[in-house]
Amino acid sequence: MPVPKAELHLHIEGTLEPELAFALAARNGVDLPYADTGALREAYRFQDLQSFLNLYYELMAVLRTERDFEDLADAYLARAAAQGVRHAEIFFDPQAHTARGVAMGTVVEGLWRALERWGSPRSSEAESGGEETHGVSTRLIMCFLRDESAESALATLDAAKPHLHRITGVGLDSAEVGHPPAKFREVYEAAAALGLRRVAHAGEEGPPEYVTEALDVLGVERVDHGLRCVEDPALVARLVRDRIPLTLCPLSNVRLRAVDTLADHPLPEMLDAGLLCTVNSDDPAYFGGYAGDTFDAVRDTLGLGPERLRELARNSFLAAFLDDDEERRSRYLAEVEAYVFP
Ligand SMILES: [Zn+2]
Image (cartoon, rainbow, N blue to C red):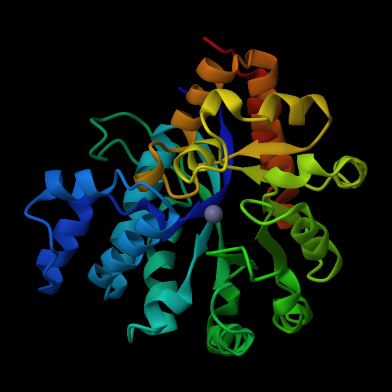
């Protein structure tokens, strides 16, 4: 079994594998402009951010009913559990669905059905071939699309109000440059007043100033990506001092060209600097691997040894929104310390 870990940066829409996309398209009578799953798999080898986003939004057309969202989350959790994920904080993008006429409740309740089922250990009847599979504890984080307006974000928060008992926090994602965190000050203040936790993508393609702004203006508790903080020593010192977690996504950084190759990724230096780094899969169907694959890749390519891998696993639970269940966090942390790396 792989090392136990939490996944804290995962877009559920980015887990849509070609096979499931075709199955849902058939179920919903949606025409996909690809001959078969092989042709679609080929399209997943996009060249840049824009071709990725075009495909990403095009495929969302197959997600229409509660059952579709349930099946999507179910497929992700099965893969994640098999790769050692014990706790997952799952992002979803309501605006990408409400803009297509799919109601907020359809998205949240559909996802929730799968999350609820995976909350306890799976029985040996599971299709995993009789093997006992761990349950996965989960949290839902609702993200605002930062290339949409601040008003649209406020309307989205408003539409989520009947479902807030299912939602732990808010986040901010999609195209970063030109959409600084401060644009969303008002909706983050409103979210905080509702008791929601706050995270935001910052410093992926945007400058280190966006990370500072996310902390100061939006009050985020965790920074998604945050990669470009390394360009600002004062910011690094602050992130270390305040123990602000970063949810790094090394495979995503390679595919979206934030770094040239995985070997160029600054993760080892960031750990050496004392940053509270975690590694995550972001949009695993598109970026070449799930959480365990990501751990394997940084081990093999960046030469991280067992104690560094243990640190990453430990950090993932330290950074998780498990404040309402510290007993569970302690249990997960004890599993990490007891784990023997092969
Ligand atoms: Zn992301």
